[in-house]
Amino acid sequence: MNRIVTCALGVSLLVPAFARAQSQTQSGPSRQTEGDAYTRYELLAPGSAKFRIIYEVTATTPGAMYYFNPIRKGSVATDESVSDRATGKPLVFDVVSQAVATAGGVRGTDSTQTYIRVKLSHPVPADGGEARVLILKTYEDAASYFAQGDVIVFTRSLGIKRNTVVLPPGYEMISCNYPSQVIQQDDGRVAISFWNGTPAEAPLTLRARPAVGLGATKTAVPGVAARLDERAHQNRKIVYFLQQPETHAFDLYHDYTESRPGTGTYINEVRAGSTVSKPSARNLDTGEELKWEVLQGDAITRAKLGVVNVTPQSEIVVFRFPQVKTGESVRIRMFETYTDTVRYKIVGNELMWDRSFGRPANAVVLPAGWMLANSSVPGTVSEMPDGRIRLDFVNPRTDDIPVLITARKRTSK
Image 1 (cartoon, one colour):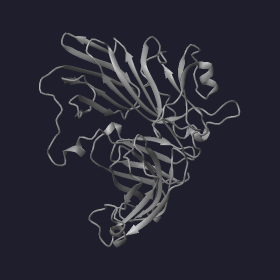
Image 2 (cartoon, one colour):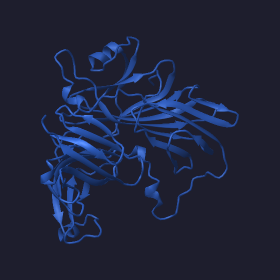
Image 3 (cartoon, rainbow, N blue to C red):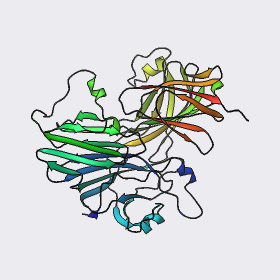
Image 4 (cartoon, one colour):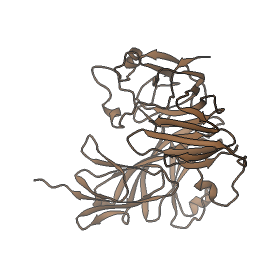
């Protein structure tokens, strides 16, 4: 078994998405890029200072055959393993120096820094393809996980944006300083889960103590399960690219991971008042183009796809892929163009976008030549390389957020 001197693998190299297009330079290899990182910390026996780390990350550097993860210094990790999330098969990994990582596209100046180097099962597909990696390990850190009498404390600055911490069996949480979901697991353990939407690390501190009555139970109230779904682990995201507002049209892509064995379709139900055109899709794990079809009214019912409340006006887009096998998953990206005269239009001299978001990660790119005037929901704003303005919204809640955006046409001086 490999053993490495390390710290939590939840610290990643954060690189803006647009850097993918700018990463290849004449002076060196493509800069490593990644996304969709998620860390789950499962606290082991109180007093052991140990916790199990389950770390999901996606390598996105086009053509890359390796993924490098930085290792903090000073601690020993055990029970390590790395696997491909698409196939579930193990991946080969080792520990390398900063020089080796730099040759592989990692930017760093500390010559003593070390990295886990993961050999991917295939090169990362070009044009937005991915290689999804799962890293497992047990970590011992008495500064992060310790006991104070009968109370256990987990305190750690978490740089990854999506995190979950699971308490030992039979422990209740008595305090947590970071806004989080509290979700009891099927085996009775209590988890706290959050999505950090800020650019800074989350300075998490939580405390727990032994309790009676936290055995494995299922909530029987109808409709509750969806509200208790772990939001931080959801990795669905969507990006809207607004065309000029007089067209009422916008392009979009949305990413989705399917892991249910036997599933071979994804169904997108078109919202009432919208029309869809130009659908396409690809498997991000392989780069393979996927088949699709648009169905309306009775054709939806005849297809026996499980869509409910079908009317003559109902419209769906069906994306098809090979059925998922046990232990495997597929990551797909779907592209569509929508026209919506109600939710995207011009009012007076302003562009108006009025739409609710149900996914945890959402982005809107304004059309060329327009400047942001209003955003009803807090989001981060950035300028793209071509000058368009992009707004990113993180919704850590399980409900929809209604987003109203207005913009005005830029005028020359």
